[in-house]
Length: 134
Image (tube, rainbow, N blue to C red):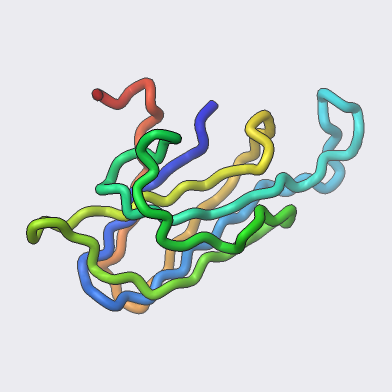
C-alpha cells in the first residue's frame, strides 16, 4: 500500500496555508496482529515541489516543508507555511502533499483539512499509482 498523496493548488503568491492531519481514534481498540491496545501511528506531512506528480524514490522533486524533522506519534499534526505561487513557464502547478507513517506496514484512517488566508486554495487526492498512466 502506498502513502496517500494530494495535489495542493495555490494560485496566488505569498499564501498562508495550514494542513491538518487527524488520525482515527484508537482508544479502546485492540491491534489484531499483536493483541495489544492500538497506539497512534507515527505520522508526517511533507510538501514537495514535484510538478504535480506522485512522489517516489526516483522522482521526489524538492522537499519544500515538513511538519517536523521526525514523524510524530500523536493523534493530530499540523503543517503551517507561507507558500509562493508554484508555476513553470507561466503555467500554474500544484504542490504534492505526502501523508506517511513511519512504519510502512501500519495503516490508519485519517482526515486531512486545509485552511488558508485566501479562499482559492484547493486540494485533491492523487489517484493510486496503479491507476496513473506513465
